[in-house]
Length: 157
Image 1 (cartoon, helix red, strand yellow):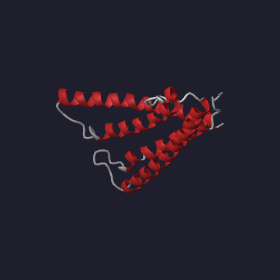
Image 2 (cartoon, one colour):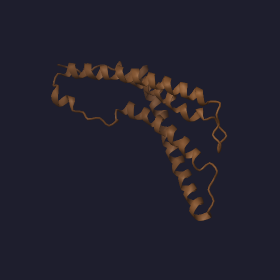
Image 3 (spheres, helix red, strand yellow):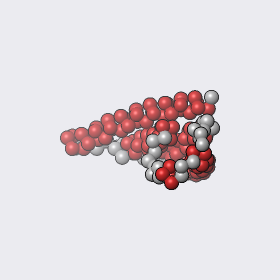
Image 4 (cartoon, helix red, strand yellow):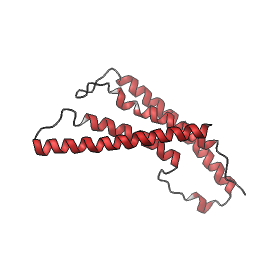
């Protein structure tokens, strides 16, 4: 059940991140065109692309966690041959990641709360919407890691 929820959240996150990156490309292309061809710059030229970039980066991290495609050294299997020890280290790693995500998400939530009454001048939206990307993505990523924590172990030694 948890694995299925994790897969669904990852799929939604992947679609969101893909659409956000496409939107970011369109926005940047338009801003560059406007700036150098028409010699006018849209009033939202800095804030809107930054908002889209932040959300796409954090939500894209959910997919990387689900697919286990984050960059890692991967040297431990060369030094430790016991599959049970490797499985234990992997589970401990998931626990530490979950704790870190929850702490980071809580700090992001506090920052979002502090800035919720401030508005971005060009977009006239709350500055907290930028910072909400962090706790939102941390919660979803923590769910993904909890699902991975409870997956059956591949240890056979």
